[in-house]
Length: 276
Image: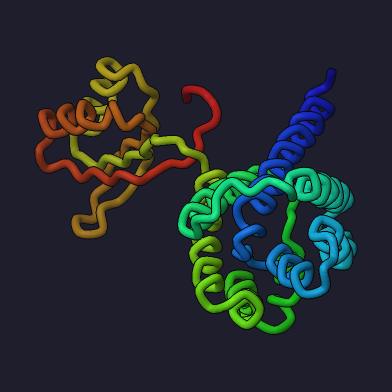
């Protein structure tokens, strides 16, 4: 099996998983408690409630024009995967629609939001989407000068206002909470849960510090050339990526060898590749 075929199969499996758990979260936590998500899914939930139309079917129908609109910009693979994700979502919503996990609005908001975030994030990470408003925003934002985030925010303001009129303002406020939970969980899924840190060390004793880090922590380091803005002197910078557990030891080594060294530490969400 070629790498390309394996990658496609892997994406399909993850998209299937993401769509199923998204449907589960919608049908068992949010929809029974009149709590909505943003975007097309939120519009579909309001429309389904008002017109008594099947929620899964309505999600597919409302997303279809946006999927076709995105064909030229996002490519055939994205459109096919997105269409597949929406069909699996619709089937999942219909399968789970008779189950209600909890009637507690706070529990439904928190756990429904987490489940939706994991599902939607998994789908996005595998190059597909469930939300037509995001596809539309990529096109409209360039023509009207809005950022993608600003356009989505404007759309969602109207959606949650409509939710307040249809379901009541308490449900609308819980829906806004759900939206923020979903957004944060999506970010975590997209960026990964890796607890690694990237470290930059500036020191006059950089080579000795680098050798000590390699020897004592068994890590790879890279030397970067720089010029001090204050002194104008050339300096070597040490760049390396460490786990959270290795951070205290690294700081001890640097402080011991050069107490005046400048150390910058930044979160790293994903790390690929080997030593250099």
